[in-house]
Image (cartoon, rainbow, N blue to C red; front, side):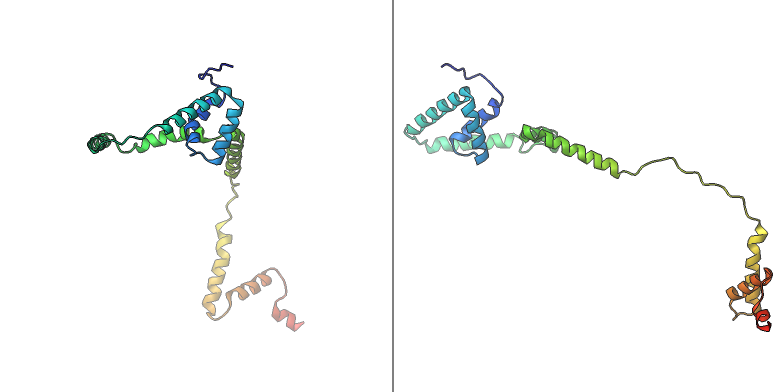
Length: 192
């Protein structure tokens, strides 16, 4: 059985990125389960995993050699110089530009329908909560009342108040209205 290592099926790229962490036991339980499931279905990735595992076991069997203090001092000096020359952080604009890409890469493809449904429901709720803009009603214009009819009760109240400041103008106004309409006043009712 000869399988080529450069064959790529669906999910081979992400699975191959997880192989180093898998061999070092640095993956979460879910990542390990997903990778093992992929390795069971993909012979090319399984062969690559076996080859990497053999390489790691051979490297672990080699004798460890220590470096000299002079080499380590030079190495750290060079690394410090490289850190000072390179920018320490990304610009905030670059981080904002990369955010959607990072979000979409971490989102599992099986969750796309749920994300789409959530966005659609959010848009629907936003549309329902927006105020409805309908035609603006035009107020009906009523003919202006004659000025004399508006001023008459006002003048009567002022006259009654001036005549007797301690009297109740509202009660006097009611009596005056009853008298004008031809109804019997209190004095007429007591005489009957």
